[in-house]
Length: 103
Image (spheres, rainbow, N blue to C red):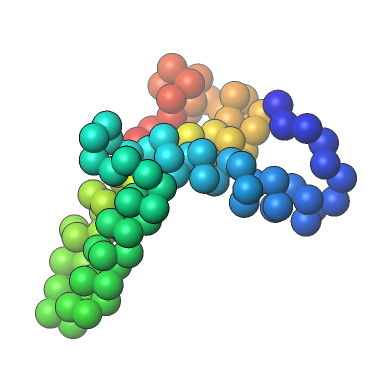
């Protein structure tokens, strides 16, 4: 799937430069954010708002505010598939869900 790069640090570098940015760029809804910078700016705005209002929001409120933005920003299913590799294919859960996993 990916080229063999050698050491573990090479793999982390490859993921940081190619895999993670591509997942970020593909995860958002069409028309919502045009660039990766827009996507990260939106995410940061929500993070700052949640941190500034953490006490008044409480745990549930923070979750409710963060969850939709995180789901629009990150493709968690794709990230899990890429990071688990062949184990994803061999998982009974992903086979029964048509190789898409549980969202």
